[in-house]
Image 1 (cartoon, rainbow, N blue to C red):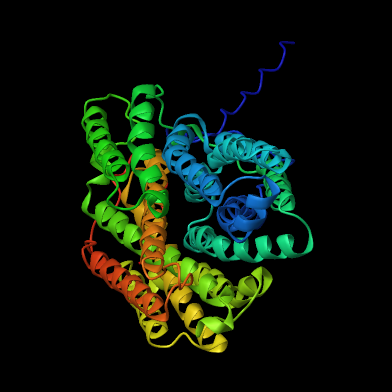
Image 2 (cartoon, helix red, strand yellow):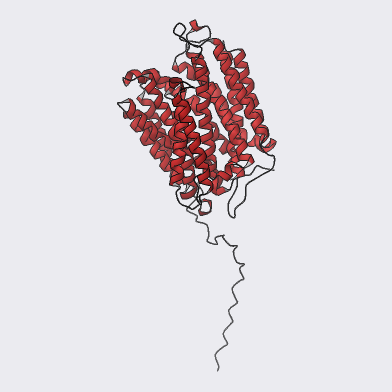
Length: 502
């Protein structure tokens, strides 16, 4: 009897080939997606650590002078070194994040910032403190790295709000720094100002290890542009040092004018060099795009008015009542006076993304900067009562928070995903330059109204300074008008963008 015929095996079901670039592997059940809320809290802590360090030392000028046995002129280098280092390193670290991974560079930047904070806390000499503050400047790269991580790893509906929150922290950190610095100086010591920064940044660095990993498609491979970095460093260092030392040297000093001219010449050479470099540190062609250029101009101007207010309001608050306009507050009281404004800026920044989704990107900028201009103009008219100053300062920073929180979103929308770090890094640099310019203009105006017989600035000098700051805010609103209505990123395959909802 012959054996039965074998039963034919049915062919396997047909499976459509997976699209190119899409993995067919089953999802890993033991690797849950990281929480965007937890990631945002980590990046907010990182941004706050750097922002608070900007101004926490401001109330301690006199304390540092006595504790380190130096002069007030030498203490100004504590602020200048930090500002210059941050301005230089912000676009550099942003570009390195585009190349080698933003999470990796964020951990490195926070670690270096924490090391600089520890060195600052242990410094026994003014120049050791200046050197340590220079190391702290690496924290400037935190903002472009955070913006890049949000643009890549966050769901589209959460990106505008997250970007707005981090951008708002860049501003409110200055107010929080004044409050924290005042409290620590009044109740602890100046060294705890830096220990606070070390603890915050170290915790944020540990948390950053759990952020979503960078995707290969978000990186921009290339070589490190060392000549470009050196040219940028030289071009920024000279004019920024000149700006921060105008109160000592004078605006018409040969040193001031010479350093500014030399720095601008080197920056022009830097731009020409970058245009001819295959892997530029800063893509100049991105910066001259109409949307990016207009947004950076608005950022420069609002940086002037915002930090001008941070100089004016604390001086009014701490001036003695005998001056005719002062409130006679200590450092803690000054920080508390600015606390409502800082909270308003935080809340406004958190909702700025939604507002831009409803109204478009130009309207929040214009409305925010005009609101700030109105608050500054009213401060010029009336700054004689504590409640009035607190309310009007809140109005100013509500407007600034609305406008500045939309700025990174506009830039991220307009540039390719691979260049987010350098584009937002340059914008952060522009804000720092505006802050330095505004602060020094205001300081020079106040100083010009004093003499040996009247060591305190006059009330009319504060009035003029508030009017100048209001004018800068109006000009920032006019710059926002120049932002084209259309535009959008030059898409690259596989790059997710931060789009405004239709």
